[in-house]
Image 1 (tube, rainbow, N blue to C red):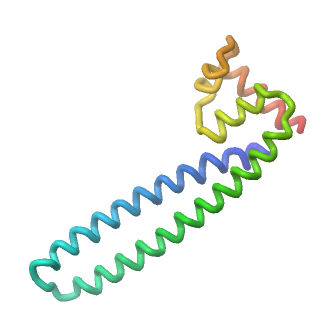
Image 2 (cartoon, rainbow, N blue to C red):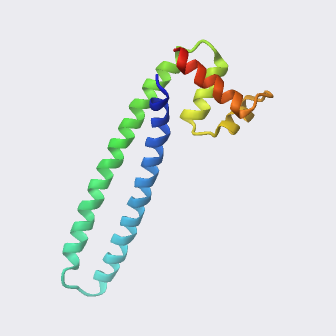
Amino acid sequence: MTKRELVQLRSIRQEIEELKGLQKEMINLLGESGRQMWGKERAGEAERLQALGAQLDSLNDRIDARRHSLAKAYRHTMDWLDAIPDSELRRIYMLRYMMGKSWQQVANALGNTASSDAVQIRAKRFLQKN
């Protein structure tokens, strides 16, 4: 497992959230266009709605693909985590990369007196050795 692979988990999760935001915007736009058409027919409005609908379908496909990538990356990472003999290291990686916590939040969750820098260095050293 590389740091890049671990960082991808957070990145894919954020990308999905951004795509969902775009999806909501498009749904709102479709809703307004639909209300405008309800009262009277506008020239070209039906075509615009169809184009927005096609874009929304494409966006939904992208979100599904990202979810599939995220699930695959999670399975791969969980298999890797299961092979780590040190439970505290497993927790560090779980909190940081699977749950998206900051290094300070990870250090706080561990409940020991180690600083966020110390926790980060420990995680980095393990990756370098393995």
